[in-house]
Image 1 (cartoon, rainbow, N blue to C red):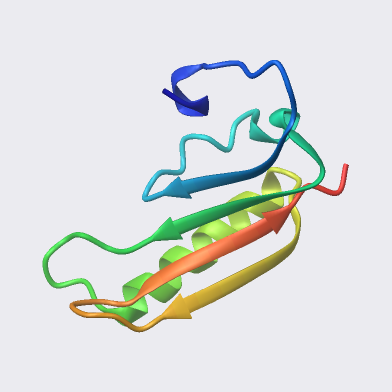
Image 2: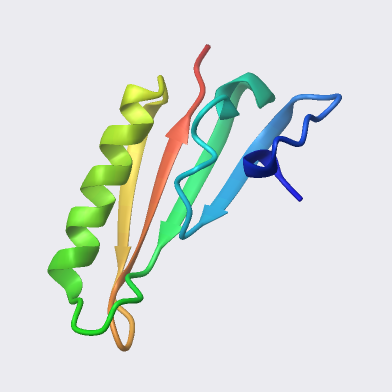
Length: 94
């Protein structure tokens, strides 16, 4: 059970990892200490998707992190088989 299920922590976290989900962004910053990081990894799962789809997904994730108040956002692409994956990292500077 995690943040997307409404779980509340009694302490602040320094890192959050999210794989193929974007539902945790709402309110996740309140659980991260200043300087804390969120990493969202994504690999397209639909048949026929390619590296361009992965790149576009990374751009969308980056935009959502920025809109949620995260800063110093990094997008890292890793070429894999059958399709590349992307990891987007943002920092809570608040």
